[in-house]
Amino acid sequence: MIRELHEKLISGETTSVELTEDYFDRIEKKDKDIFSYLTLTKELALEQAKRADEKIKKGEKIELLEGIPGAIKDNICIAGTRTTAASKILDNYIAPYSATVIEKLNERGAVFLGKTNLDEFAMGSSTENSGYGSTKNPHDLTRVPGGTSGGSTAAVAANLASWALGTDTGGSIRQPASFCGVVGMKPTYGRVSRHGIIAMASSLDQVGPIAKTVEDVAIVLSAISGRDRYDATSAHSQDKNYEDYLTGEVKGMKIGIVKEYLKSLEKNVREKIEKVIEFYKKSGAEIFEIELPYAKYALPAYYIIQPCEVSSNLARYDGIKYGIRIDDHVKSDLQPDQVASTLLENYLDTRQYGFGKETKRRIMLGTYALSSGYYEAYYLRAQKVRTLIKKDFEKAFEKVDLILTPTCPTPAFKLGEKTENPLEMYLSDIFTVTANVSGVPAISVPCGDIKIGDKDLPIGFQLMGKWFDEENLLRAADAYSPR
Amino acid sequence: MISKDEVKHIASLARIGLDEKEVEKFSHDLSAVLDWIDQLKEVDVEGVEPTAHITGMDNISREDKNREFGNKEGIIKLFPEEKNGYNRVKSVL
Image 1 (spheres, rainbow over the protein chains, first blue to last red):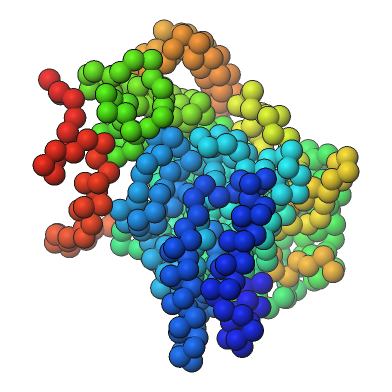
Image 2 (cartoon, rainbow over the protein chains, first blue to last red):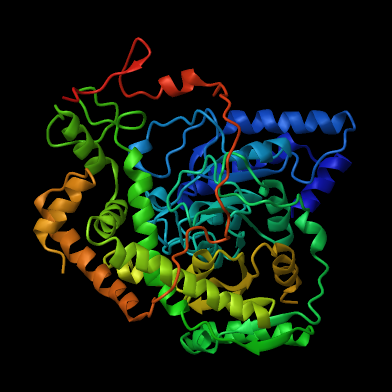
């Protein structure tokens, strides 16, 4: 889609301003039902669009993304715009700087339509934890879009953005991509800078692209990747144009399948995944059965590591430097029981009323696990289990180039279906979380619909690749076309 | 597994105020999650190094030179309460 739009801009068939205004029209009509956007950045978008149009008029050569409108998940800072991480505690926060990925997209001339909804501080699997209300799945408005990048995936699925950025810590790009029927990818840990991303779990967070096709995802990935001196965890990497590696060929590629994963699925989902495996076999890839014996511990390990890092990263939301402060000068509409009169009460009230339930749950889980006497039993142990999981992947990748799994056990569930029991919600990340825990790149690609009632709900399959081997991962994902 | 008193203690460490109903609910929720996480005890981690950085990078250093941030006003505007360019807070003592 990006390439087609790019051709239309060069040929003069349309202009970036027209494209941008079209998107805003559609957003006005459809987004009151879907609620994918928290903040629209009309002024900024039109400025960016005009700039792109001027370059084209002058006959200057433009990048693929130049003038192409997309959406940014609201835990990514854009200077001068409201950035909330979908939390009341940042209700009035105007970012004083832009994330590195935003600077990079600016250099390529991309247009930002607005900031999309997410689970508060990117914690959740449905976008229902947003402090501002849940986004709905465009394919069935009674169902969740998935999370935490639900706003971004819903926007792309409903044609309210041609591409989007999300973040993925345990599956937060891939799972909503599967639920919304779009492509979503998490790069290798360190491939994309985290500077300017509202931090959640620093050893797991990654920014990634969401779009309708694998080619579009590759184009956005090329724009945002690269080492960043402001992110000490970002990796050395060459500048690559990933879209140049999409040859459509998978002959000779070795793809690993984990039998237990398939056995655990409902029949209707399993059949879709088996069809995907058939496709790759017919296209000349070799299918191998592999084992990841420690992978079943990835989810519990994740639910120690992540809350621990969260408890540290969210300590900064204390009402002191920015955001909401519950005080006698209340600048928000939060209603504390009484007015805070001491510093301690400031902290307690700001965080009691500013944070949602899931956020508090995870901060407390992490605080407990890191508290004196428990650090070794929980965090340290989980990081050791993490090493074992990584070794599983290293062993598997000696035998195969890619691993194919379902993205989620089910298609999108109903709003409210899993909100009572946090554990049930956590389990929807069972196939995606291993990629974050081991650091490998992973992508979810739509592979059909599951009929439930009178609705067709999308479902995706997941490919995981070797560390820093996004080229082959994208090549294999792109080759899949349900012709 | 986690008592209400422990929940109150953790909440105080985490500087999060809780009412009685929340203490009750969190005690239930956190116990359930911790019970489920207990399966990690099954794993033999003898001699295993913990992961510090998943893609194996070492410490990075930079030149010890100052750089202007460039948007001090943007930061000051965010102070919930500002006085003469300072961030005004409740008494610390």
